[in-house]
Each structure stands twice: as C-alpha cells, then as structure tokens.
Length: 45
Image 1 (cartoon, rainbow, N blue to C red):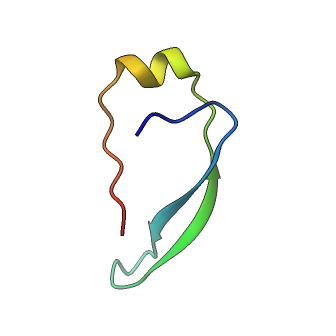
Image 2 (cartoon, helix red, strand yellow):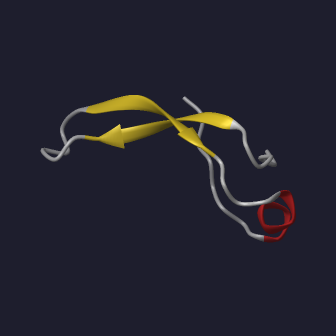
C-alpha cells in the first residue's frame, strides 16, 4: 500500500503501560517518491 503525502491514516498508539492502545489519526508527511522507494510496513487490523 503506497501512501500519498497529505493522507490521513489511523495508527495504533500504545499507552505508556504497553497494555492498552488506541487508534489515532496521523498525517503522512513523507512524499510519494520516498514512500515508493522505502520498505515500511503497515499492518491492517
């Protein structure tokens, strides 16, 4: 899944106790060319 700059995605953020987590919106700031060349993993739930 290639992300576009400016896209809003949901990211699973853990609390400091690492037992709980909450989905929060995040903004993609890296550009399309960077995202195309790098192998970053995005897991869907």
